[in-house]
Image (tube, rainbow over all chains, first blue to last red; front, top):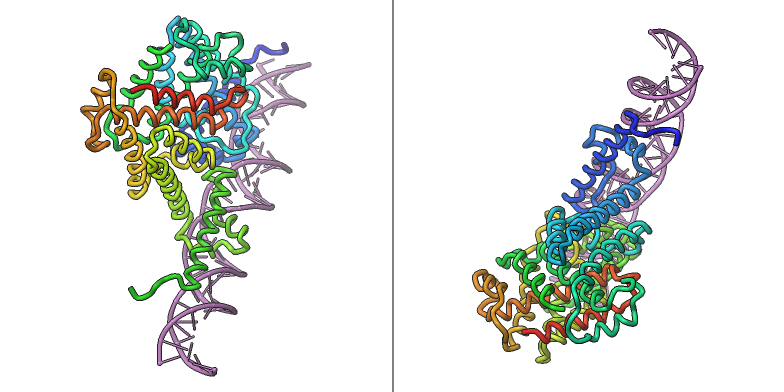
Length: 213
Length: 213
DNA sequence: TGTACATCAGTGAACGCGCGTTCACTGATGTAC
DNA sequence: TGTACATCAGTGAACGCGCGTTCACTGATGTAC
């Protein structure tokens, strides 16, 4: 180790990088990820376009980093919610809060895929982390009820989920798909015009999940 | 009526319009809706860019028409599935087939929204049609079980759904969100790496829906 | 059946735009002696 | 403390690209008499 880092220059660098990302997020929130423009960000910051290449190798690297940050943020949120020894209900509400906090960030992870885009390895790793937190929370609840057809199928296709019991796998999947179903339709405005409260629908789905084994 | 239409020129016109749309769909399937380019389509057809303005007022009109067609296609599919007197199960399978047939078309309707985009009125109308078909199928099944908290909420917020019984509303919503949850995660490749069969998960959710009142 | 005219599909040039990215450079900030 | 040098943030010009869109036009196809 030649240096203890945190020189003034380093701090400045870190700061500018952070500001670039902030503006990038603002742009995404405003017009979606495909509208992200390096030149526009630079202009906002009172710089010229090429200056950003001191901080990111290019547009692709910026986007990849934003996606990674999004995943990491959700993973942290999940871990924090689970760490309190709290259960599935807290996980669900944490997810909802996180999603409503920045819908486009949610869609950056769970939204319409760009055909042909392959996520880098570290993202896959973080995604697995998120799933693991969910799986653990599910495994903490004792299973009950008869074995379902899906259980039988999962028993033979468990390359994921580690050594956790099959009902935990099934419940985690169900948790995920059901909450995503409500959330994504809500965030994309599909309920607009129907005057019920999406939160009530979300709560109903959650209750249903908690009641079933 | 001055004319019986279907002159040779009219037929040619219709044909070219159709080909433009076809190529547009191919482009969307390949790289998402934001990648749609008039010039590229023209080039593929051996024409120059401006020629397309004989057929569409511009890029926006083309996209709007594609979106409208997507909605109409789903509405037709739904209506056809329901017309046979068949129930929710057939509706579900029709939806799944329609979605798998062209994932980007599904996402054009239910995917990540473009912030600030407001759908034209006729689209809203068709969306209501789709919902009506689903609602009718739900209303055809007699309700059972106790009134839920969601029922109570819906009873006070029923600007949509016409005069159908509240449990039908609840079941239609649940049908929609749950199947969308599985479908959208499957289509966006989120299950990749977990080696179970998404069709089994879909079937399990459907069974669950059919079993519950 | 033939001629005069109208319709309209498609061209090619042009406009203006913003994009990502490269490159040689200036000038300020930091480091080493 | 002062001088010589290295680092590196940011500039400005430039490249090449593809985009949507307009406009005046050519030439083929259809219609009317």
